[in-house]
Length: 160
Image: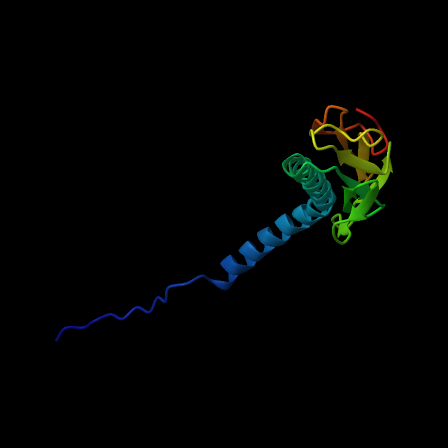
């Protein structure tokens, strides 16, 4: 008769292998979590600056397309858009908030606007300073010719 030798080997991992992997993952998580907490405010600052720059570009294009003056009005954590109707400015919608943890600190003018020619509305060109909770900042600059750019100063209240 033939004797067959049965050996039982189930596929899978041993308990020791699983514990080693969990230990390595916990060390990686302990290193990554503090870096992630520092990354989020920077990400939000970049996002807010690009968001407002995009809105400024759209408002400028809309001002040229409709042959009407438009402006953005800034508060500490939000902004709104207004349209010139004769000699008066009329709101076009609700306040739009900037991302959480971002503050609009100071502006050379609380308004940035554009004429129907795409240039800055007289008295509204200037700089809007965005700051995060770590004191980092980005500036949105609108020149008198209507050029919109983002620059990064050394500190939140710095200029560039």
